[in-house]
Image 1 (cartoon, rainbow, N blue to C red):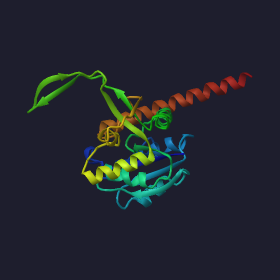
Image 2 (cartoon, rainbow, N blue to C red):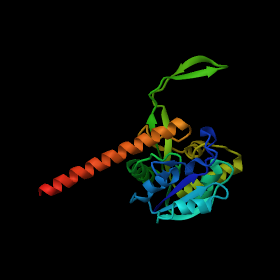
Image 3 (spheres, rainbow, N blue to C red):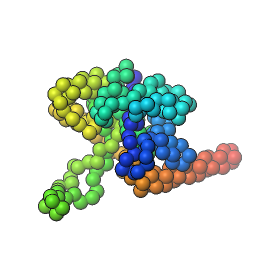
Image 4 (cartoon, rainbow, N blue to C red):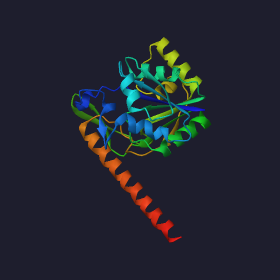
Length: 239
């Protein structure tokens, strides 16, 4: 059994939204609805737990009222790490996939691949190899060029055996360890995480430019879906 934990407590400060960016509408639906909808439609996901901002449970419930796999909407904590722990604590599944709602362009293929790898290896995450040249800088000046071989941009979902990630959250809190993603908890414990190659379009919405990019990607996906449906219709009409 595999649950998805969707973290939706982002403030939207860096894109000057004035409210939680999970509620920004793109192509007619909220960012949160796009993200949850993709997990809703994946057969490998049994239940969905959404962790939202303080006082936002009713708003989330209204947006997700047609998402039948959503079994719990909980208020998050002060940090992403706290919210992830809350989400995992509300699951009874064997495995959990933890995902940032702001990564609304995640695909079903990525979700299914991470779920399968988590079941096989105990921990997995989706990412993409860095294609840019990487520089180390100090005081506003370039110091050196970094070797980008084997360097990945890490995305979500990140999938884990639930009892392991729950235990590591508890240990990290006790030891005062602060992390920005759940893979770092496994790194802290010296455990391996399987990397899954994903699409570079699986960005985390952060700026106004990201909203434009997301809208363009969604429009293109819809165009392709419509084209395929049209072609299938023509094929059926010839039979």
